[in-house]
Image (tube, rainbow, N blue to C red; front, side, top):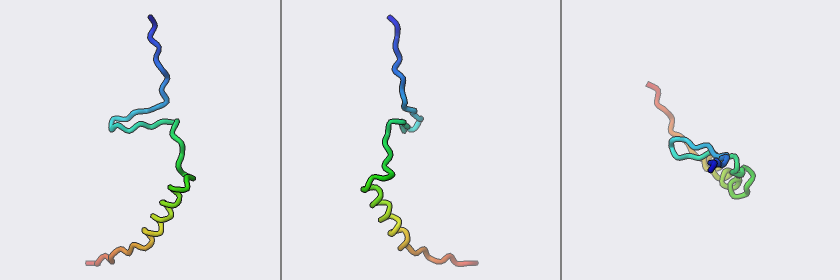
Length: 54
């Protein structure tokens, strides 16, 4: 009986992450666009303390 091996589009790395070409992009998803805009506003409001020169 011949062994048939299924072609796999996934690439697995040692850390358990799987990279697949079948995953859709969320670049234009309204939820993620809104969250990215909120994050940009939040980061722009952050003020870092001045570093003291010695």
